[in-house]
Length: 217
Image (tube, rainbow, N blue to C red):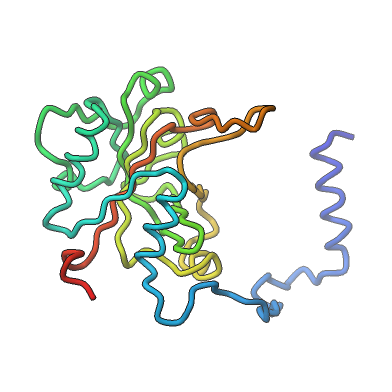
């Protein structure tokens, strides 16, 4: 018996007494645990920005009008010129200039030769400083944000959930979900941090506020 067959056999055995017509939503799940670690009245967007920066990611806050300039500044600061763009990314959002935008389909060698990738996000999680991608429009497949060494991600303030349970409630579990907390990093045997091992070495997160940040209370 293969490992796959062994796992499936265990699952079938565990479900043996479950009526065939029963669906997961038919069984209520107790949710008595604490569902948010955000304090009442706390600025969720500011908390998200703080936690993302804790992971050594670069955070830029702007409004809709300032978005192209913010993207241009982020890319210019990295010296990035050739970038992957997923299907569904709004063309009007891309800054004008010397950048070369490479649309899908792209194979792995082509992705590896690029300076980075620019995407949207499906959600953000304030408490953990995490961005979530679900391969929806403007986000692309996983390889798009794992192979290039630089990921520039745009998150709108209204997409930021206070904690994981709220974020999960906003997401479609049938989609492949990728949770990103900072640049890819691990530690070697001496506990020295090494970045860029399993994904991008550099992560820039642009938060789009509904109004200019300086006008917000």
